[in-house]
Amino acid sequence: MFLAVGAIALLCLVSVSHSAPLACQDLLLPLHQPDLRHLEGRWALVAGSLSHLPYLDRFKQRDSAALNFSGNTSDIKMSVSRSIRLDNKCLYDSYNISLEGNSFTYDGTDKSNLTANFVHTSCHDCMLMRMDVESGKRQHLYLFSRRRKVEQEEMKEFRAQVECLNMPPPVVMDASKELCPENQTEEKNEGQKD
Image (cartoon, rainbow, N blue to C red):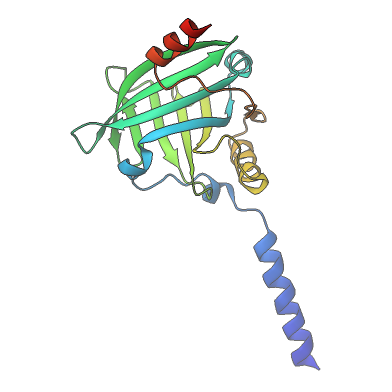
């Protein structure tokens, strides 16, 4: 009898431990070293949150956004091109980053002003970027994926990560809105077809 009660109690504890939310320290674990080949290619912005409310308001105006990583000859340097669709226009910029373990810096910028790193996510085809600006006065957390929309559980995890940082609820991109063409030349050619 006691054995049966003990077994039931143990089963209850196991099921509760599996359903309990992860602690914030587990949710915000930095990646040890991102795989450069995994980073290469295009990533659609799925959701993001910013602690600075005026920037968050501007962020909400985006229709879509994407990053495209391409490797250089170095094992630690990559080129990143960013596209943002805003008011049915595409805005492009590009920059170089240097990878240092789980963090990265933008080449040619004041490195003391910005700390950026990749954070672990259970989403298999996602990339989570965290940025602290001005010694943590502003925080940014961005979820990118190879897909335009992630599963409900993956979004739930991202919302919990945002909450752990005491940031406003994330802005989720509308997956039905078009991404910009991968480069400006394609955008010009598309515009000439009209």
